[in-house]
Image 1: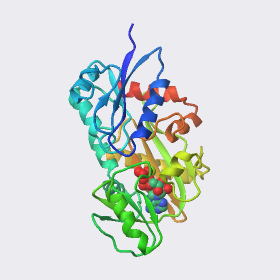
Image 2: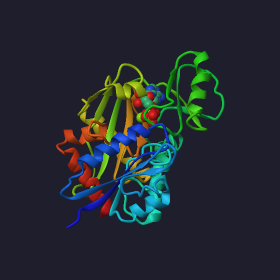
Image 3: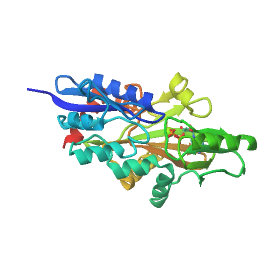
Length: 312
Ligand SMILES: Nc1ncnc2c1ncn2[C@@H]1O[C@H](COP(=O)(O)OP(=O)(O)O)[C@@H](O)[C@H]1O
Ligand SMILES: [Mg+2]
């Protein structure tokens, strides 16, 4: 009997390419080989597709990749950021008629857009950081966080304290997106909540994770190991309940499916939603697998639930 063929797609044409390649490699290795046959597909930075099942001659074309996808039972799209997590890959799978892990196009697109996420969250009563959308320049009114509307892994995110640093920060963010958010600086703990559509137990949240970092959680800190994850994050029962309820509310309002990581700040006057990741980092060492591991769900078992959930 042949295994269930899972197309594991990684890479992508954005600044999170390497992060995605790591997620995809990790997932391929951890998928139970007695049950699944992992089929590697990597999207290069130039948009060309690569993989052992793509013929050398045809290598690179989307058409060839679609031929491989057509032989697979399910897709595990692990491309973070624009042209992947933003609904692009979900849309491709929909059109190709192959089931896929994770959120449909609309949820991916909404969650990838940090401005749209704010509007949806506020509409269902979940507070977010006050922010303004800019497309060219911004006026300095005090310390702010500047970030591209759609990016990830902290690329293009700057904490601006001095007036003269605002322009360069906006320019840097504009290199990644044509829309930029200028947000109030939130001081508080960073707490992430994972939501999982568990095919056995239904929709549920994982234990909360706290990110402890010296300063801003920037790209360097994210990958140099100086960030510390604490799972479960120490929280009062009422606090945790409120965070979980809000995470579920936003997940539903955006129309997420499968899995998402919903990130909050816990400030002195309550919690504030930061962002929603519909395809969060998925190496064994990433936040979401760590959260579920703390609840007794191993990394291979988490992946198994995601794939089974997608195929249902
Ligand atoms: N408004 C804010 N106030 C304080 N810190 C922030 C704010 N927005 C972002 N940060 C910090 O920057 C990091 C990256 O920002 P985030 O919005 O999560 O972008 P990304 O999609 O790149 O992860 C956050 O994890 C947090 O540490
Ligand atoms: Mg983030």
